Length: 439
Image 1: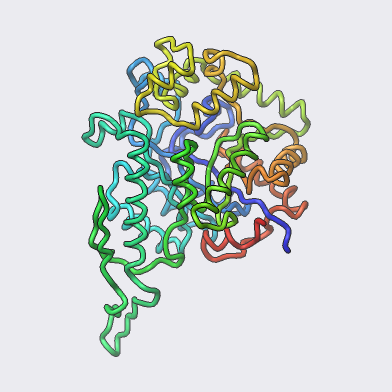
Image 2: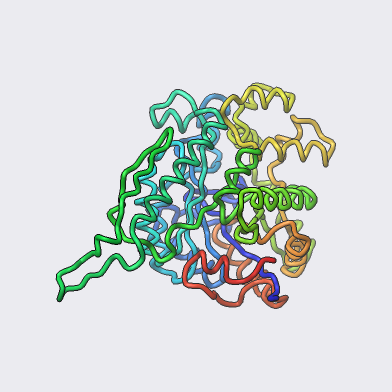
């Protein structure tokens, strides 16, 4: 059997920062091109040269306004912001690459299945079958209010609705058979209509007749990606996900998550090897270990403490300016908002570091791997070989230099060890994900 090879995705934002809230202030960070096409075309070329499976954009549908009841802190201090709609950026990236997977975050809570299926199918066709959909159910009340809702639906209901949205999208993507588009001038036949059918999907919350107005894409449908951490979110991922994006806690936590997801996929009647589980990494590389430590310390220095609280407030779904001192109190106060993964991560930090809730929420970076290219590769290989993951989501840090350096120094080391591809083997994103066994 072939040697397992890890998978790599890049986590991007159409704004100043991804998860590291101080990286945009670094002297090497590029800011004047945030609204320019060249920024996104360049990083696409960098990632394809580094043989990444793909990249995806984290996205939201509103300015974070939980902390102190407003968005001022997040805007002024440079928190996670989407200055552009990723769906407008991805075609630019597709045009300058041939193999790189391209994806974005789209919510099942605020979009109708037909619109989702149509947008994603169009991009999948134009990119030659390289699109991924990061499926989210949305976790912030301000997003709901932007779509005419007073509040978010309850968590369990959001996932029930998400199941229907994905079912409906899949039905729409299957309306056209392969080869339906004939384009025969001599016979005067554009489409073999006998190979096109209605979707006729009817659920409790969503229905759609179909068919789509476009033919089947080269990979049939976009690759489905998901990041839920709650029991219901994990069940959703076990049913649908081909890539699972998860936060990195301890090695033991990652191994437990990996085993749990494999068990859930078996229970759902799926082959666990059909899904790549990838924790997020923030990587700081230095010529020596001490230089890497100094670089990490400098990045930490650039983070405004208040921005950490504002970001944690959004992720937890509770205003930490209100002096919430207990994690159970925070869990109760958040209502329908907040991400279960963030709550779990705070609990993990409290337990492993022996700190209080108030102390845990002030910590900004818990996914950091630092060192020389060799030692970074050592740490990644240890997690990969110990069945804690199938690869990694490498987060945008100092843009674009951090990802450039990773592709220039860490990727060749992984390739030398035989655990990362030297070239793309597939034509589509799905083919590249499944090109080598993960068993």
